[in-house]
Length: 248
Image 1: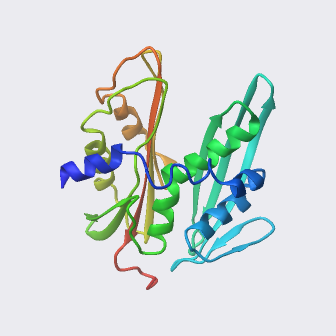
Image 2 (image 1 turned 180 degrees about the vertical axis):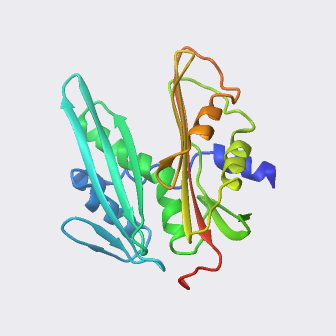
Image 3 (image 1 turned 45 degrees about the vertical axis):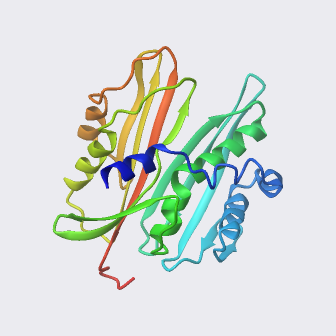
């Protein structure tokens, strides 16, 4: 089981890596992030309602996407950031952001949506629909005496070079999560590490939108390769309580 888990988190999402970049519809709608997300839902046979300022995904647990693309529209720096607010039925909000660049601002926007697909999309639609597909791994963990289904996304990798992810990276993530005092129906985790020119460029361990400072500091203790280049990895996880207090 450990080997299967490791292969899942380091291999790319073969089935969805071209969802955005090779779709004319995404190219046409990329200026409106909510419309692009609505098209993602449609392509995965998920019912939705596209409103003026949000997309409502009609999963077993209905969720609302409110998304914005914020461009840095200068010739020297065609880059932008995708911000997402995902509102749950209990009113809590998952906050996620993806920054990227491209040869043009349109390319950067497409890359932002693709990053969302690669890192978060399948975790979200499966966690809130109580389903499983080949893009994620689902396990059952007991945390704070509560049983959770754990929807584990792939390691989203960006790099300008070949590098090796430390073998114990996922074990580190799992260890931090299992130490938490979780009690709600849902919890979510984002792990990120960025490396540039033999230095730790950025790193964070986010739990329910909050920075876990101890875990964030411990990320740098993993045996990262010191390379004269850029690389980063990101992992997104959602935990769903097996017996919901709201009977969801």
